[in-house]
Structure formats: structure tokens, C-alpha cells
Length: 115
Image (cartoon, rainbow, N blue to C red):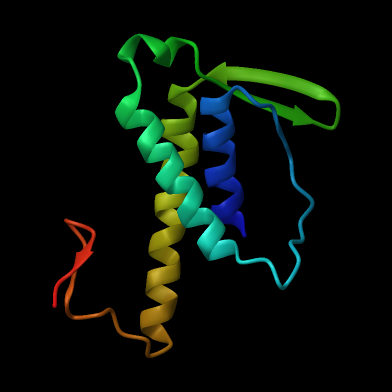
């Protein structure tokens, strides 16, 4: 859920929305993984198609209990995206420790699975 919330905050930065801190609980029937991957795809498409001059227009906006805050988009890269990558590594480590091996056909550099 935390990774999902982090990715949502990055997406909001690109769409100009203000990110309100979420409640600590997401419904058990919510497909968090799928929704997170969909957001990552949208973020990727937005960044690939963006004019580099737009980056100054993107802001990370928070609403922390009625206290609005705004930061440059670079804060999302240096903080938020880095945090998501860190937590993804934790998930992988826990999966391996639980005996769930990584697919041997997976190329993590290319993000593809070979046949």
C-alpha cells in the first residue's frame, strides 16, 4: 500500500493535483499491485512525452491536515521515487526469504521476461 501511495503522489505531481495524505488502510479487495502498475505506466508515458521545459511547472503538492505545501518536482525524484525503489527492493528480499524465487527468465535491466 505504501508503494502505491508513493506512486500516486508522483502521478499527482504531473497532473497538478494536490496529494492529501491517505488513511492508513486500503480495502482488502482493492487490486493495489495492478493499480500501482497502471499508475507507473501513465507516469512513464507522461514523462516520455513531456517537453523538458514543463518540468518547472510540475509541483509536488501536499495537504497535510489542512496545511498545503508545495515543492519542486525534483523532490519527487530525489525523495519519493527513491523511496519507492527502496521499498520495492524490500519486497523482493522478503519474497526471496519466503522461498519465492525470481523468475530465471526475467531480465531486470530490460524489464522483460524471455521465453
